[in-house]
Length: 283
Image (cartoon, rainbow, N blue to C red; front, top):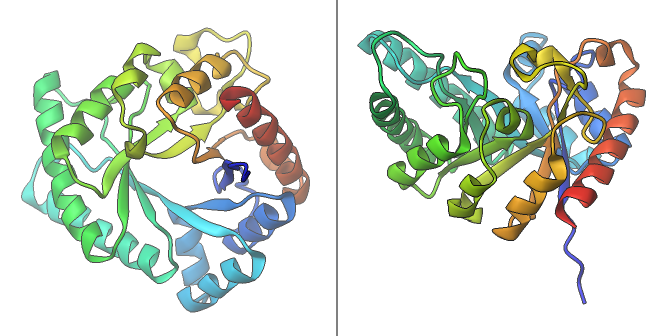
């Protein structure tokens, strides 16, 4: 009997003290299967003379899979045709890079709220933008992973709303990013997981919220290793397990005091927490 093993990933924001090549090495040495690449680190790597061919070879040598590029940010609620065209050019740029390094996903993040829009307008706009982005991604055999953001000033804050958007878009190469931090912040419900198709969960970010801080006061800086904070990770994991999800989890933190550690030390600590929490959540 073959036992299914959930793949474990590291997001480059967790190791902000490292450059892109160091991220790959830390992921490999720590035991991670996957790496999510940050756009700013890719830019720095290319600006310093790195090539995509060498980057692809580095992933192969270190036996780490490039999993997603983070992120096409604030791609919805554009005011002008110029803004839309600039966003579509950016989409093409990152999809081309993703294709050349065999990276299957590009994460897409909705915009913050703007005046005079209601929920239906936000949903219709996000569907329209996703269809345009999806057309570009399809040319490069890349999938778009749409991430809802739980902070109240964002336009898409819950799993329920994000799932409605990707369901309406109805494209094989459009799915969801589920981030436990945003699930918690935006008050997504465990019941809302029941209507999600497991095949539509492309990426699962696992992290926790620092204890002793009120939910409405949490910022990105308050993310901590999974299993040591206040998010009910076990309940969230079990809800996704119930729909059959068991593909991967990736650690995405933005914690400045973690960035003061040597990358190798942070990587090993990160792997231990991700491994333990993923087993606890999905077993």
